[in-house]
Image (cartoon, rainbow, N blue to C red; front, side, top):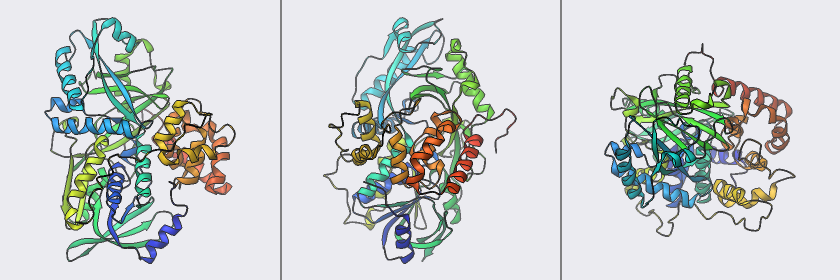
Length: 532
């Protein structure tokens, strides 16, 4: 299903205020998108608004992993791990091509923690909770076949286990697509500036269009704050105290030829024992992650710091010394803010990743949690308000998270990898994307797994309002190509400018803004730059 052809029509509907909404969801990340889908499938009239772009915040800047949380077993959080691994399995089945299995390899060196047997016990429990069984431990010789380029000295062997990976921004967009297909409405660049109260309870929101500054007041029976790491902002309008601890996680991306990994390789950082990983993602190698307190302005873009770059480079040098990686090898970097509930722990990485739900003066806040369990979080949120909608219960006939994707079996010009990608990323729209492809647009963009036609489709049908939307979230070319894809911008312009109906002046301005943004927040920082 396409995105609405006219944003103006939807805004006119809000201006006329003729639609009575059951729920307004504030926040266009994975949590808000999940709530939108679950509510729409219950037959509720639901509107989602996002002050910037869909998936602009945490949900396009995560580690891209759909995982059960192996480390939570050590913390005794078996129910969280169980729920996570089961959701992981369902996502791999219902969104194949978008959520894909990823094997992780963990080397066992003499004298390093955790030891073989402790790790093995954790993996047995991990697989049991997911309903899986498999071989985990390999000899040193076999393990080096799985994870070449690691040091051989003192290597006793290694363990492998299964998790999954995704394109986090595309997962959000796929969920929004499913929600729209179920009758929901979602608008980006529409900010909530104020909550309106009736008898002491939040009953409406004042919205402002970031593109033309027009304002709207919209009522709903329930208002849900799903703004993640930004959730305290709305809560504090009500006089509530802050309860979140924003943590920054930063990542580096390398060319796959420079940091070649077939398996994901995990290690404990030699400095502090925190887990670090590198794995193949979208045609490059992704390295992450840090976990530090983020005290800067939450409304500004977030970027990796020189200290975090050094930390991740130190981990790679420790695990792959023979590769002699340099900062000059890095294609791009990115950083995101995680919504973590503050319990006052001295070490940020020790804070829990459970989600929380608070009902305060009619505002239902949903925050925290993991990308993997977004569906369970949405269901939990709706349980808190189910008494308001007794006639709108989950449809027992809807068992799958996503609808059946379009059939591409007759598209002989595509290989199986391309078919799976289009079906996973675009669901019911996959066949239409193939049909609009012009000459050469089913080819893959060098250095990535992205097809040229995906740019055309995004520009035509996916609510792109700025060039950064197209290159950082609808596609991930800004992360996958050097200088944010600068060398390909002429061809990207030829494909997308007519679809976007932008004037030459508009394109020029958008390109300048995008490149300035990329160089400030996605390139490596200079050693002199201080975090904001």
